[in-house]
Image (cartoon, rainbow, N blue to C red; front, side):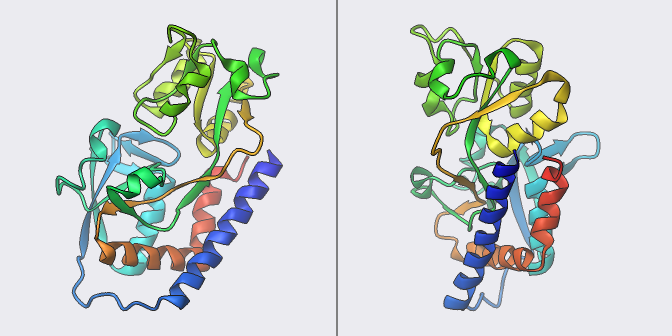
Length: 262
């Protein structure tokens, strides 16, 4: 666990340095007339990254707090709309949102349809398993076990690694919390997801003795904030704010709030 946190801390430091170098190398002047309010679309629940509290009608979580800090630095406010994951990625093209937030992995395929900010959070793909599967060393050892993952996400491409011939062992919850509940209830034996999410829930539910498996040499992926293709003004404004909060320690303080105990 300590090696994982050390690697993530190093990556976060590299992000801050890279953002600073970009800002110095590309001193673009933002337009004089900029929006004061941006429409942000997010999924209902991907805690600890983002979550909609239906009781208070507030959007919470790491990315929500980070965006609020960026907004304060850059002098704008945000208004949220909540949707399912299936409907989220179309909101930019349909002019229903200015940006998307909440565990959105930056991929080459998605870059063809939308633009992204600098990375806001690094992660590795992992599998959280129940105790009896804790000895597994690779994803392939879980083939045929009851594995849950979310469809229409970057994890869906991993289905052939886990699925039996008929695919009957696969479970497809609609939300991250649904994945966790599936594991706790015994409906499934393994949960595929991002390291930052898996580590959070492993720590939150120690009584279940969950274990997390990572593939050797597994690459680091990154979450970013998505904006409509060609909206360079918003990308620039968000990146400037990200640079500021990384440089003044705000980013680290927010990060530690959610993952300091791991």
